[in-house]
Image 1 (cartoon, rainbow, N blue to C red):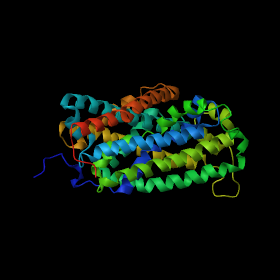
Image 2 (image 1 turned 30 degrees about the vertical axis):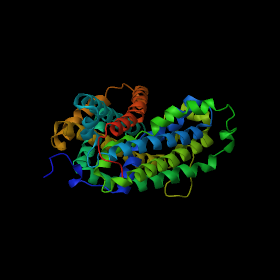
Image 3 (image 1 turned 90 degrees about the vertical axis):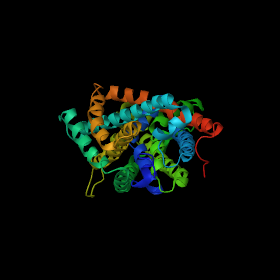
Image 4 (image 1 turned 30 degrees about the horizontal axis):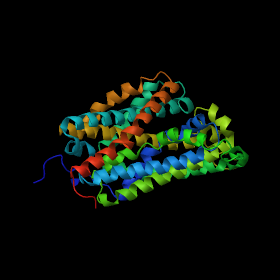
Length: 371
């Protein structure tokens, strides 16, 4: 008879496509609304679309490394198999850091969701009220388990992508290719400077530390990572090109939410919706909501597996913690600053640590061979 809490796959399973959709939804959070500004601030040239492509390839490799590590311990999440590699105490430290990371991402997403909602839709509404409303809705979804969440994401993703592409491509009427020229006019160094903020927007591949254990066919987890990285890469690339081509790098630098401002900068007469920013915003809030629920569940699952308890009490217990963290930044500028700091930590935490653990597990012959 299997030990309790050792195989989360017994009841809650997801398919390869659901794992890819979960990864896509995690990645496509608030980043798409701010990516043009953050990358242009670092590079100061319109060549940031090259930085996006390079970053996407780097993230894909990092995600594959995580999958190779997790497949050596099939049926167990990182929180469960880490002690086999590093020993109990070091694993506890690593697990606590990763749980705190998921909590911070969850709080940042819910705060950005509230900031955008307050600024564009519910002006004057208390920030705490908006945050609590979204959190309780997210809790209701998370209580259904990872399979329930994955099925909701499968509904949200195509709707989001469809309306996003319609809205962003309609801006072609104000698109000017000269805003993207000359290519590499300032050399390669600005492109390299733009890689770091681009990497932060691809944060999401780390969810495979948890999701791989729930997959019906973990042997196809690499496929999920490739698809789950390529689609955000394409969407980010379209966003960067259309925003810079529409409002130029100077416009992207001076706007808090340049992607939304691009959609607000034109009208299409004769259609049911002549202005698309409100529709896009409502749709994209669902995407940010997805990121919040994924990270909230991952953090709660981490606690539950550390203490070998049911996950549901921890889902409730994490709500006040997330709320308090979300209310710490005094304004949107501090929110972005905290998000940048957390993102920089994630580059090393999930870009370097999994590779080291994979090498250690191979040398120490821990876990099964990767199929």
